[in-house]
Image 1 (cartoon, rainbow, N blue to C red):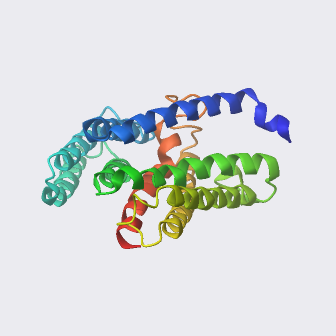
Image 2 (cartoon, one colour):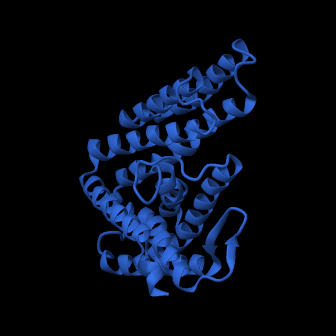
Image 3 (cartoon, rainbow, N blue to C red):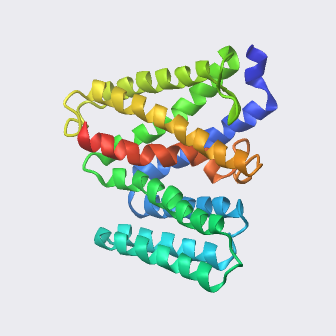
Length: 274
């Protein structure tokens, strides 16, 4: 059992994960422009990886997607959120215009992926930055990573050691129910500990910081696994192993941030309404 945890692949994955955590710590603590431009860059790279699935990453459709992503992040940076709906509609009209006037160069599936990729990656991932902007955001934003990376790490370790029953065999054969439960449990426990340690700093967000953080991280860990499996589903449909090779042991940006993409907006709204 223990030999499974000390393979070369596991070591590379672990070291890469540690480096990502260090980068996350620096950018999240610093916040401001450093976090903003880091998230924006990650979003554009993630969009590129997704567009590469249907070979549109360097074509007019894909370029239009990048421009929409830049425009969206510009509204966030200058706090002009009232223009975001205009961007969404103008973007949809633009890519449909490209589709129509270049027909039959592109398939409808490619057009839909461009719009989906913009919203799925750029918009949803931007909530990491938006959480950081909240009054207690410097403390709340860490729950995104407790819910996603902590859940993923403990789900992996628990699955390797105890996994027997498949969670979603047709999507991700290596994921187990035991691993899933282990990831959720770890997120809840660490979330509760986090709430206890920082209870003096997050009183505006939660009446009971320990319970609030435990609930938010627990719900977030469930959503993170949906995000992970959703990304796996897209890869399965298109018969690719990883979205990229940027992060050793993990793959591309989407392979590592697939759960964060789902969790970030969920944590934002959970913190707003719990």
